[in-house]
Image 1 (cartoon, rainbow, N blue to C red):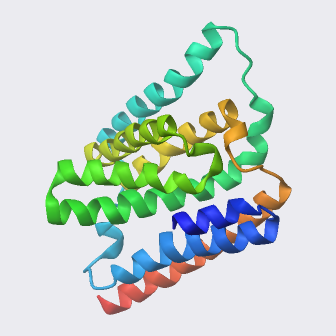
Image 2 (tube, helix red, strand yellow; image 1 turned 60 degrees about the horizontal axis):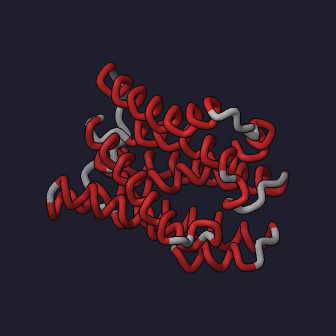
Length: 223
């Protein structure tokens, strides 16, 4: 996965990025492969935490979003720094896609697998570690300080996932606002977002929806 992300960012032209990042890292390794490995589970979607959202989940979501987003924006506003809100439109769809891959893989698949084998604490730590290390593929996130920070962020996402009752929807919507804010504050560390990125992400998300529908129907027939 790191290799795919790394290759995509060596020569980040639209076609290269779509093939190595959207298709290989995203659809193949982060989505289809985990689904395939979960095929023997009685209910794969329940295993990865695709569950209804209730009051408990909303509370966990609200707390984590307030701290993660507020913790980044408030100090900037207090210091009178300029926040590049104008960058957000081009980043919305690509970040929606990337966040899905991260949560489905690191929380939905890996964290649950690790918890089943090694317990909650180990699962949270390893999930956070894997989340941080995968960012080594991005040239802008290869410093030791960034990896440590991402490890802490990954533990936060993993903890939110666990506290919400392993609810992938909560983990996703904890990560997504954080991704938006981080992009606006540190856009120079991210791959360049352009219209081609949005189009490629829309295509990728459509493929994900189709695979989801086919998988759900196949699971229902088996049951």
